[in-house]
Image (tube, rainbow, N blue to C red):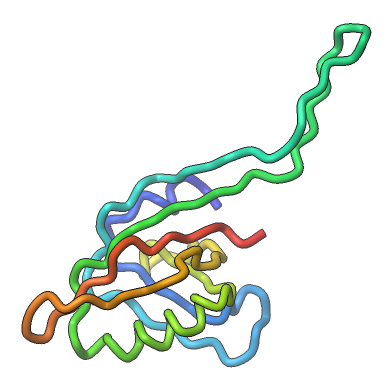
Length: 138
């Protein structure tokens, strides 16, 4: 994953379960409108730093946790079933491939960190998904 993958702005695409992991029968759908509130990234290092008696520092990194979140403020009613099926799969921590730009080849294999997903009514034929929190699948 590179920084440029997480800049948002274009319509995204989701493939679930992850085709990159060779999981069976992947389903793909593209966002009808661009995601919003799209931060570049949030990362945290997990590991340990020690200082030896000789004064030398040792650092051991177990992994770097990379997360990001976004909103999908415009979901047409025609896409509600696709979002329902995706959320039903992803909320069980099934890995999926997230393409921030559906026209580009770059993607990140993620798991959904939300414990709930609500498709909120915005008006006739229009819904909203608030704050989908994704973690890079390692």
